[in-house]
Structures are given as structure tokens and as C-alpha cells.
Length: 312
Image 1 (spheres, rainbow, N blue to C red):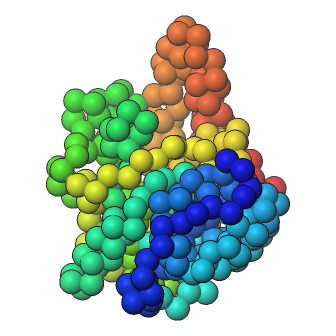
Image 2 (image 1 turned 180 degrees about the vertical axis):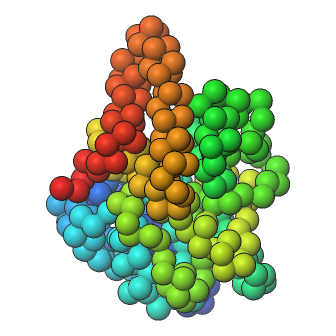
């Protein structure tokens, strides 16, 4: 897509004024994806773009064309810290976190906010993101990692017992009780989110959603994944290429396991996840999918070393 100004759907002033919610978008060398998302929004949609690339690809100029947009420099602080910065500088009653590579509609955002408005015990509500085949993505939410759940995932048994692993992939329209939800299209009350501490900034990216789900549970608040609201999502395309992301995913998981478990359980789960990756590497290599095999190897590197490729 070119850098020319996009034409947005216009609303009459009486309908477009006074949004109760603000959309929080964290970007990193992803102006093209951001443009794609904006094409489906209203011209005066209230939103904040927190750019971890500090404007390197012209995101500030794009935001300047938006009636309801504002720009915040994320200063390469990672997803969790950038999203929190957007939340803490907002004055909206509600927030909707969205990924630049997702394609929600304003109607979906409004449905999420409506549910929060009428249920005070609901701490977060999310739409279900879908992959290119139209299936709900694995990892749209899930449950607290335990050795048993890690074994289910390592052996691939989550395909047979979909509610027994760490990551969920529910069918459209199905109701499932989750321990955490992904933040690719998730709504919260702004003040409540801030009071709870927001996303855990110990995690540069990944596992901040798992940690936030834990925070909500400890606060006695519910979470609801709306599997009737489907949002297309081009996984992994809003991170400037994603060459380091598998290692970061492993490093974040390793850090999370040690932050919330004793050392023996954390080490056991890390070993289980590594063992589960080994046959996947062999199968990918045998099928000529060397890039996928390399991603699995990078994940192992992250979970073994706990080392983020983005932090010294």
C-alpha cells in the first residue's frame, strides 16, 4: 500500500462524537498493516498508536491524518510497556487493544464494550482471532501452565483433548472457560486495567496476556472469549519481520514459568516444552519446511536460555 492518505468511512457528526472507548494499537515497523486496519474503521475513530519504532516508517504522519488519532512514542519498550503507555495516557472509559495485523470492525469493538458496560464482574472480553483458513487460532486464549497441561501440548494431545492443554482453539460459537485470553482484540475498563497494574512489563512481548489473565482471576473478575465474534489475523506480521520472535516466545514462557512456579516445576515444564519441539523439528525438516524447523529451534533457544533477543 502506498503512503497516500486513505479514504475512510465517514459518519454524521451526531453519531461519531464522544466515543466511550479508545483503541490502543502497538506498532513496530508495521505501517502497512496499520493502514490495512484503518481502512475498516470510521474516519473519527478514537485511537492511540504507540509506536515502538519511534516513527521510523512514517506512522506519526499517518496518525496525523486521523481525526480521532493520537501518536505516542513507545521507545522500543516492548508490547506490554507500550500498551500500558497507551492506556495510562488515555482518558476514555474503556479501552480496546488491537493488533495492527488484525482486521476487526467497529461493530465488533462496540459489542465488546457493550458487554463490559452491563457486567461489572467482567474484567476483560475478547473477540476470537482467526487464521488465513478462517479457523480460530490456537493461542487465542488458554489456561495456566502446569506439568500436566505441558505434557498434553508436548504430545500433541490437545488435538484430542482441546481443553486439557495450555493453549485453546475453540470452535466458532463454542463457550469455553479460559484462564487467560490473547490481547489481539480485547476490551477492558481503562481505570480498572490501570489499577490492576496493566500488562506485566517483565515480559517484553508474549505471556503478558497470560499474566494479565492471572491478575484478573486473583481479583475475582471474569473473562469472556466471544467465539461468535471472529476477527481475521495475520499472525506474526506486525513485528517488523518476526525473525527473533520464536526465541522471544520461548524466553517469555521460561520467565513466566519461573515467576509463578517453584524451580522444580518450572524446570520440568521447560524440559517438557523442549522435548515436545524435537519431533516437530524433525517432521518439518523432513517435509522441507526448513524455515518452520528453524523457528522451532529458535523457540528452544529461548526457553533453554531465557534470553530475550530484544534485551541485553
